Length: 304
Image (cartoon, rainbow, N blue to C red; front, side):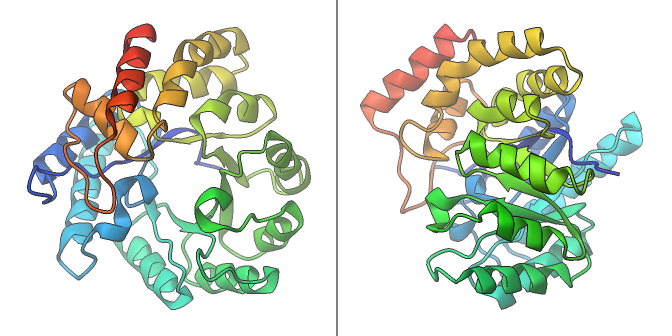
């Protein structure tokens, strides 16, 4: 059974002005997500500024994981609703990716999100063996295909091969190509119906679902979880009139939320709305003045 359906939030990591992690703000954000009806959470992804977080035992990453599961378990107990957690576990060092997947399994995550190895630029065989290694950990794996950050696209024939490995549960498809997304649905998901195909781009949520995909791992939902849940739910239920209405309402914001990088832009938008986000860690910096105007205008025009 595919439990990875709907809108999942790629959680930001709120920071204090001195650059320390705002744990109280993070807890507030997780509660906000759950109360607003989000379908699932993705902590420690790229949007979380994970490359700059302290991964030593008991430090920042472990504390964030602890908070997520405390709040999710409490919400599940109260509501009776299952909230899948996909824990970020990517690295360009296969040994480290395995360790992160083991951490995700130990924490009780429903899946680990594993990005294509970046910078190293491995061959197709190297990419396959990377995912083969993490698949052996024994936790469902969501493959994260985002050539814009890794320098490598996973073509559909390679993804189909990876999908035959044990524990490969789906893909976060952020190639930016609707044609490739449709190939994945037509060639991989058609063969394995429980293989989840999730958009990695908010603006492509509607076309992906219309083509037969399962939902979105969203950046926008850090600020507007209810609307992103409604967009995904409408599409998945076949109410495309409602899905289009929400999509076109939010289209300017989908563009603005990346106008000066991620998570810089969404953090600025959240700060405007009074949602805990705060500062960024170098090498990321606050968005420039032109971007601020674009984001503020989109928030106003979209009625957010």
